[in-house]
Length: 348
Image 1: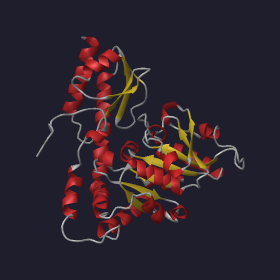
Image 2: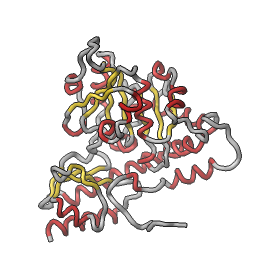
Image 3: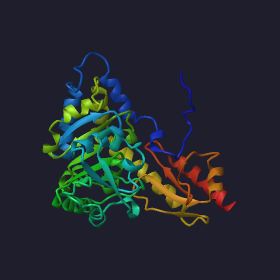
Image 4: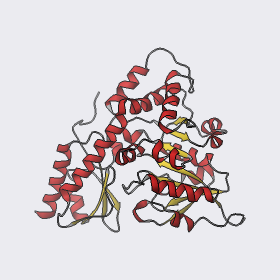
């Protein structure tokens, strides 16, 4: 029984899209018969091999159910309860996890105001102090978002600089990679090239926004941080009994470049949308469009009229900033129709 109109499209979130066809097919192929539970299956074994190929020989993967869990379990594995993670003020872990990192793990997030959502060694330094001071949570990790919440992408050199600074100050580095596929496509690099090769210690590997269904993972790049991870995942209620179905989806994203191709398409659609709106009066862009997000400011009344036809979110109620997201199934026709609606509302 189908309850929705499958032709309806929106620009609110890449979570609105369904499953990538290759991922849906992989679930069917993984179904049937019996496989050992709790990660003892052949799909999870195969995924472990793929992750070592993609992220480096020391990489270890721990599939989980959702992105919040991936971030919370990652950060928990990286520090004791008196530790703190330095994050951008706009970071997802700060604004969109319902306080889970602090409430569930007991750690503290130390925020830094930054341009374009990207931390730098200089901005990290504003919070990287007070070690040994019992009055202050101890800065023990840095967490960056790739691609960022503002649609920008860190270069490999930028991440390397952050890792070099963090490690010099005995801090570890985490990447919230909910849109890691979009970042990899934008950089035209392998995952390892901008994670393990530049010093990243732990990655939250997103799958859902790339076209999976409830398939995310923690990827540990520093083996020393893997001690106890199996227990931590279980006590965090993230150990899947039928893990083969999570692993099969992630395998499908890696197989034949399906995930990268899907992310590259989403990025391309965002670029197409921006190019069609450049120079339109009454609209200004607020951030570079590096991946699959377009941020702009327009009159709130105009935004509401556009939303009568196309759903999207207001990002900042005070400034009128909106966010338009493209996904793997966004078509050129979708973009052209949306852009035409915006131009009509702005120019008459």
